[in-house]
Image (cartoon, helix red, strand yellow):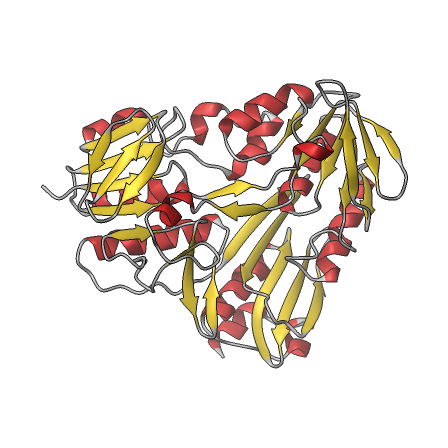
Amino acid sequence: MRRILVIGGGQAAAALIGKLVANGVTSGITLVSGEPHAPYQRPPLSKAYLLGDMAQDRLFFRPAAWYADNGVTLRLGTRAVGVDATLKQVTLSGGDVLDYDDLVLTTGAWPRTLPASIGGSLDNVFAVRDLADADAMAPHFKQGARCLIVGGGYIGLEAAAVAAKRGVKVTLVEAAERILQRVACPETSDYFRDLHRSHGVDIREGTGLVRLTGDGAVTGAELADGTVLDIDFAVVGVGIAPATELADGAGLTLFNGIACDAHGRTSDPHIWAAGDCASTPVPGGRVRIESVGNAIDQAEIVAQNLLGHDVTYQPAAWFWSDQYDVKLQIAGLNTGYTDVYVKPGDGLARSHWYYKGDQLIAIDAMSDVRNYMVGKRLIEGGISPAPSVVIDPSTDMKALLRT
């Protein structure tokens, strides 16, 4: 019996195992996760779950019984602490050793935290990675509470939206010149800055955090512009780092995560990786995509190759973020864009089209599902209409797909 050992408990692990089972593998699969839960969705933790609009049982991809019924062994609440690639063994935190024929690392990423020297270890300072994090911070999201959010990326903005909807007084600080600076164009930053300010969020850009203060629990914050805030809790959203500790210990090649080939195989022929922890080759370099879509697609490619198929992964980035009543949908990779063209819609609807020279490479669509779907298909099909045509209100956008 072939032994496939999967490390991780998120989207990539669930997609991989689901694909294997759907293709008839109903024995020999073992999942190891440090959390006490079967694999579950992460994105709702900072959105619907934290807001109270999604019950915990709806987070899980499948009930625990499904795994037993399909011959999948769950080793939950125990961490993998070491990989011996020579012996093909994984050591668990409790001391058990598991043998494998193929190992798949779907370890995800860790949230970056604040140093203890500036108050990062105080109580009521939260990051958002797992269910325990969301459960710990949820009681603090109540009317009249005062929250500092450190970081103006998507996690920080989603937490700000939830807090504001709950009646929390929110101050968000971003050390860069603008929110979303690393991931989006200035036009998208402007859109979400205006959206949050219209809901009462105090956004301060170009302003860093000096320190959090308090005796045991956080009670205040000192900002680089000299402001001193009284706060009841803080949420830190300053990015993530790929979880590569096991890969590093196993001697695997690392490059912005665990370096994989186009099949999902690492530098060891019997170890594979997928999801936020893995980087994959693209023309001109290598990319690591932090999205649900990438985790699913990459994991399913690995599953097919574990079954002996010769399938290569072609990254097709797509992402979404829910903030207030706005759904942001992103398709493509905007790296290296030269121009952005704005297509207004009705009400809050709008789309931003990224071009690199004459090539359409990405789209940000805010509450604009139709244009998002057209843009996504254009990008995937390598079709680049003239920008003047794209933003013309009289253009039949679906007709562009037939050109």
